[in-house]
Amino acid sequence: MRNFIVLGTLIILMAGCKPGIPKDIVQPDQMASVLHDIHLTDGYINTIANIDTAKVLAAAYYKGIYKKYGIDSALYARSMEYYYSDPKTLDEIYKKVGTQFEKEKRQIVRADSLKNVKIEQAARKKAKADSAKVADSLKNLPVARQKRRTDSIKRADSLEKVKSRSILKKKLSFKKAEKS
Image (cartoon, rainbow, N blue to C red; front, side):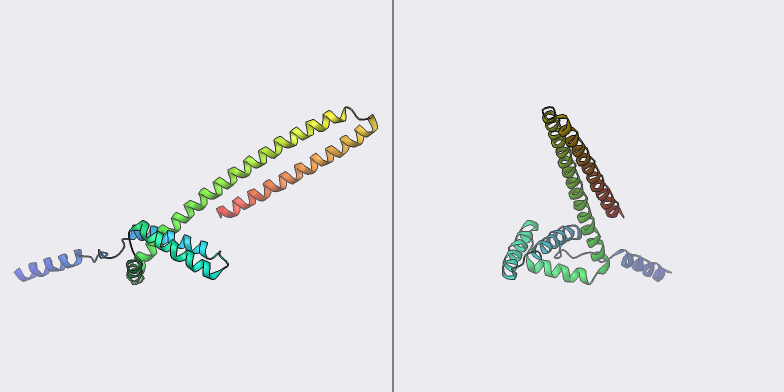
């Protein structure tokens, strides 16, 4: 009976001691931030056409990332080897990285859409101001020319409305595509 209690206690203790992430490895939360910055840098570097320039810039950016997080390339490589051997933890890390990128994407899209709204409002104000100037100039024209001019302005205004509607439809369809 005594052996059974000792054996049961040992089994419980062994089951309770789960292997954790070693201290000499970059911890998962910090690794997610490091990988986010590294993948962001990789994306930028891939846009550079000159390969030599890209290599020099990549080295400088990576050094900056390592310095920012207080690690070096050897620790990064060792940490990646460890996480490659533990796919579940690596998957969790990359889920965090993906979440960070999605959050940044939403911020950029929101800022871009606000910018487009401001540009569109400015264009409308300019169009109104221009149409007021045209209306003032019509008063000085002979009656026959005024009628032709007024007809052409109406056609131009209706074309502008059609264009602005199609632009808004494209923006709405783009936003719907992003949401899905």
